[in-house]
Length: 183
Image (tube, helix red, strand yellow):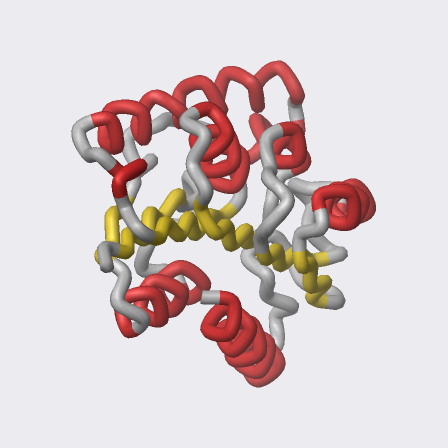
């Protein structure tokens, strides 16, 4: 059985940050072969994530990277596909799956509202209510509409942290337990 896990990071939140690092570690332990998409070559500004026009431009730039990286692979032939995404990567992962009619399990960390236009009806999402880059009320509505299992991290910012190390580690542990069960 072939299993592939594709990581769609945020632009400023790379594969070695806790949410993505541990999710991919869990995926590898479950037998998934990892593939990492890298958005580090893209110039951006946090303000871009608040401006719909700039966000559209940023999305179009980020979309080119997985198109190139994954087009060289035949991921549709995998027995199981898992997409793990963060921030703008949530919109890119959802769009890529929809565009290619892929049945991929989706894990969304700090989804941006734009992911909702592409998200399928199966996934796991984590979002904070103190995230300046995404409207948590809209994220919740999208998750309910799409039947995505959603978990609000009270007081959490875009990195799903609240600023207290002990609480952040407890929340990370709870999230990873849910990720492991989902995978």
